[in-house]
Image 1: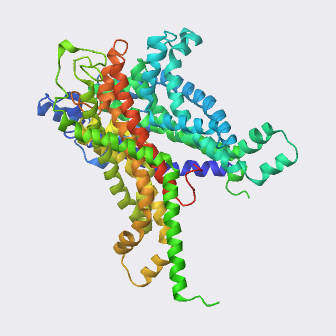
Image 2 (image 1 turned 135 degrees about the vertical axis):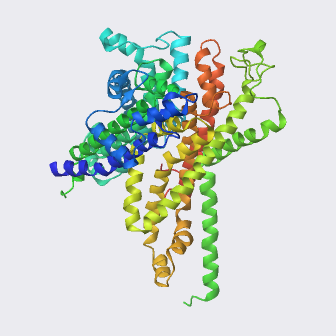
Length: 316
Length: 298
């Protein structure tokens, strides 16, 4: 198992290398250098040249890249000139609400999708199945932020059940925190659930007609035990993969949804950075979220081995 | 019992006829494919012909008509600057279809080139696939945001940024299918006869990857429409006065409680368009994959 984990981590090195090169290239390739973006169109050419030189963007590409790479490893992700703060500090400051929202959305997604997927697979071909598949198809067609707007209209504007927008930190009490996060988390959760429901259904369908399920039934086990223990356990890796893969869309969905609900998370940071063309912050956010995404998928891969020991390499 | 030539040709004709019949049945048995294609055609026709039959300017502001509810004067109401939402949503369809279509075509073309050559040359494969792995690891919208914030907002920059986002997944699909076809006997035979790599890749392997490619193109089309709307919504997409669905949604954010139709109109447009494309993609996949009969197994 340790060897497997080690191997998996080792295989990440080329991926992270390419990721870092791409993210660095994005700022390197800005026409006129990053200073043009920071100072704006009306800045004088000599001012731009001076700032580019100060930031070290007049040196050869490989030197710049190596320098940036080493700095990133040492925790120096650059400075935001607008926030008067280091990029990593800014991300740390804005990350809390995003994490809360993403975790809550993932929990809602799992609560909705796994039972629905199981039910749809079990009642395959019936009205329940058709309804579940149609709803999940509709869910994949709605961008998260759009669903947020519909829910915001329904819950906040028409019924006043939940606040229309805003945020309460965890320090103000858990209930208040959840009250503000519920509608955005629900909309993100539904979009996630659409994908996970389909994966749960199809992976369960694949094992539902296997011999071991028939054997379990033949020996007189209760139907709930057959489905929830025997079948679901074998469908679990596929469901886990779906959760891992959809994590990227969850975080990006969170970013867009936050700006709608005025939640002071990474999304708001990104939005204000886009408007100011604060390229270093955007670079930092992309790097941070990508690292998170890669890490989540690493954890998913390692979990496989525990959920289904047959998938561990070196075991038959 | 002699199996004459005549018998054989009759038998093969019967098989072909049966295949045609089966194909027709499969097509009719998957309502998703037909509904999806019809929905997409409707959006497409509206997008093409609205400017022909209705010459109103989508950016014309009539301040007296601000935030009018849907009615006889303005079919779908007006927005906060008194612009007619029906006209704007139709011009928005043009933007979305243009961006989505360009992204689908460009990323499929680029992805096919990369995937085919990666499947054939081992060294190239290592390099190209590591780059693709890296690009796939960066969440799509964020990569697009980074690219657009570096190069500025314009519809072409949105198209290029999203093309970079979706090309790696096309390359992977094409490579995976091409690897299977490469092992087929007819490819081996062509190689033995001295066919060059260009001929093998483009004449023998390419036809075999067309069907998974078509399916993926329709999904990328749909994804690109969602992404464009999200990017415009964040202010990193199509620049502001232009009528794009994302811009309309962003504008509606501020008047949501006074004029919910400003959000519902472009919102429903996005959903209809993306849903049609997804149904079309699902239907195509079931139709082209002979292992699934009539789309029963999804």
